[in-house]
Structures are given as structure tokens and as C-alpha cells.
Image 1 (cartoon, rainbow, N blue to C red):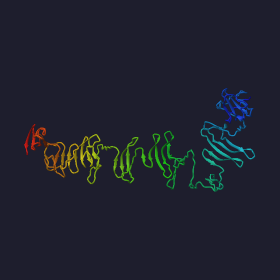
Image 2 (cartoon, rainbow, N blue to C red):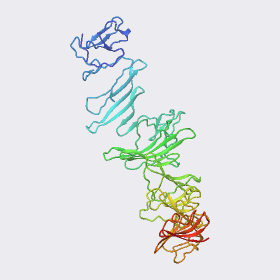
Image 3 (cartoon, one colour):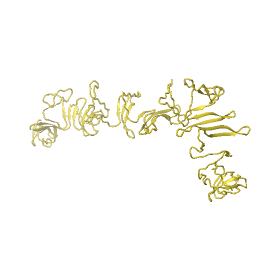
Image 4 (cartoon, rainbow, N blue to C red):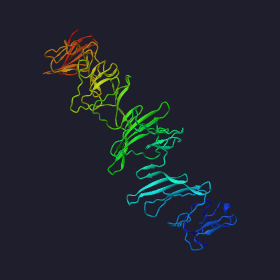
Length: 564
């Protein structure tokens, strides 16, 4: 048996690649084997080829037997090394239904011409003509227009049989694409057929008359579509610029033909320091809702940030979000919806879940979302010309009020103007708070009360819970406490009408402090139980006898004068 030629046969239907024994005469065409089928005996590491597939009389030739030939491929169908088929001016014919050339790389078939020079090689596509003679109907040919090492130029030419002769119809060269033998008239053309009109490329129409793609001034005659597929369309301006001009509103329309919420956009690229094209900016359209008749869209602006494209401005249907700081070199005008109380401008913090800080309403009001501090930093915050008076005006609600924190480090207020139903301070009053307790309040009617949450007593301009002391003089006739009162020379405190003291008031004199205890009632004569302190002075009523006395504690001894 002669050695098998050094040919790696193409995959042929009917191979047996996992046999455990040698093939027999019954492994024939009835078992789907044919001449050229391969049989691999994996048990004995032998390979056979079918040379005759006759039913009941199949013959198989073992590779490597007979003339001592070498195995040209292994049991897994891999070549054992590079192989060459020397046809020596003959033809190699594959007589099969379909012939497949399969490869794991991008180039399953390489056609190479070993001779030097600019002549190329190609592929002929033949078929039988009406006389049953094999005829070349089409040819793809490669042309080496310049074979200079390092600067090679090539071409790919497409030829077809035209009137019995193969002629080139299209040339793809390194510097141009050329169409040959285009029809020079516009008759008898289909809608997708091209013809040449004095150097202009035109497309024919289905009605038999050619349609001009564009006029001599570059104007398109109607809508045109360029199907790029998955490729790129590069416009090389060669140092100049590419302009898209239109008399309409939208000179450039970018459309996505597929449905769904994915959008389209425009990338702005440039080369980085490594001379690699990089996307530096992007404008992207997002279809947030593609429901017909109620479509919602968005426009997102993205820029390269430390090498990565990130969204900086997001314009959606309901809001526009600026994801980093915005610098305005001019004025900022913000217009509301025209509905009183609606939010006009809202300020949020930078947390993962943003918290609203300030909310400016379109009626001029401002709502605070959190406790806020205005840090004057040694500067002055001034409010002027309010109601023609000037100053600072706060308007509270009926249940709360507004306050002023002067020195304490808590959120408590030192001064508070309270509303009508505040439980700690009276109607429309100015209050002074220390700790959590109101100490002083002045009502809108000019009444003053002093004491812990102490309300003014009806009929009195001054009400004191506990005692009152003065280092000078005290006069309770005319006023500084009262309506439109004026000071009296020599007096520290002047009460316009009446003064009410919840417990006592004291006068500090050079001899000591005299305390006025007011009225005391007891079922006994005046004693130290009702006037316990030295220099206590007051009116005493003996509830048992009805005697009223003026009593005085003289260093622990009670001195009294009976008045009734």
C-alpha cells in the first residue's frame, strides 16, 4: 500500500474520530461513509482513510502503512506540522456538495504569491455555461501596486464576465475607489443602480429614469441614507473644519432606529499625551419614556474626569441636576411656576441621600429644612428700610414665634418674640430666656413681668415674682414702665401706674437692705415667722382678732404699730 500524500484533507461528512478498533468492509456508504472519510482508532492509535465505500466491500487504507509514509495529522484532526501541496501546474479539485474552510483566527485562508513583482493573485468563481463548459464568471484579484518593503501599497479589484470576457468593474486602491464601465445615461436603471453623469455619481430609479443624488452645487435632491453598519464614517477636514449648514431649525438630526429607552449621542474625541484617541466629552440623549404620545426625554452632558466619562449636567423632564459646583459670571434669574408657595429654588447638602437645606418659594418666603447658622465672621449683617423704619423684622406663627440666640451654645433662644398661644410667654411679647426658663417679658401694651414664666398681673405695669432690689431710689407714681413715660431725675426705676410684686422688694441703704414684704396674714401677732429677716417691713393682719399692724424686724425683734 502506497504512502498517503502530504495533504490535510478537508472535513468530509462521515468521519469516525472515536473508534476503538480498525474499520471493516461493512463500514461502507450505507453507514454514511464515502471516499475520503477518516477513521481514527483511538485504542490502537491508528488512522485510516476510506478508498472505496461500496456496500459490503468497503476498503480502508491505514495512514503510515505500506511505503513508510508519516502520519500528517493526529487523532484530534490537528496537523503534525506545516504541509505543502505541490500541484506542479495541475489542478486540485474538491468534488463535494460544499467545501468548508474553518479557522480559529481571522484569516482561515491565505493566498500567497511567492514570486516578486507587482503582479498579484486572486480567486476565480467558475460555473458551467450552456455548453457544459467550465467558465470564469467572476474574479477577485489582489494587485500589488507598490511592493517596496515598508511602504507597500495594494489594491483589490472586482471583475465579472461581460459579454464573454472578464473585465474589471470596481477597483479599491490605496488612494481611491474607482468604478469602471458605469452607464453614462439615466435610462433603464433600477432604483439602486448607479450611473455616471459627467463626473457626478448618480443612482437610477425603479421607473426607468435616473435620480440625481445631488446638484452641481452640492445640494441633495431628496432624503438619502448612508448605511454604515458597525463601521465608522470619518470626515477628514485636513486641518480645516467640517461645517453642517441648514436653512431649517435642525441642521443635524441624530436618530436611533431601534425602540427602547437607550439613546444616542455625540462624542468629542482628541488624542491624549500617548497619541491615543480619547473621549473627552459626550452629549447623550436618554429616552426615559418611549410611550407613543407621551414620550419623555433627557439630555446628559458628560466630560472626562480623571480618565473616566462622568455626567456633570443632567437635564430631565422634571429637573436639571448639576453634579458639581456652578460658577456664574453674571446674574442668575430663577422663575417660579406662578403658584404661590411652590418651590422656586432648593439647596441640598452633598450626602449620599441629599437633605434639603433651604427652599426658596415663589412668593418670596424661605423654608429652612435644617437648623442654619449665618457666620458673619467679624462682619456685619445689616437689614434696613423695613416698613420705612429700618431694622430687622421677623414674623412668627401664632403657635411659636421667632428668637434670637446671642451667646449660649445650644439651640435655645436668648430673646424670643412669642405668638398668641405660646405656653411659656404671653401674647405678642418680647421675652428674655436663660437656660430653659423665661425670665423677663414685655407685652405690646407696655406691661413688664419679671420672674420664671411669670405673666403680667392685670392692672399693673410692673409685675415681679419674688423680690426687687434697688441701690438708689424707687418711686411708684410716674413711669418709665408704662405708655410713653419719661424718666425722673434721681430715680433708677419709675413705674407709671402701679407696680405689683409677687413676694417683696428690697432697698439697699448704707445701713443695710430694707425689704418690703407687702401684706402678711396670720392667726397671731406679728412675729419672726412672717417677718424672718432683719429690716423686714410690711403690713400684718391678725386673722383671729382682725387687728392690722405695721410690723418691722429690728435685728430679730419684732416692732409693730397697731393701725386698727
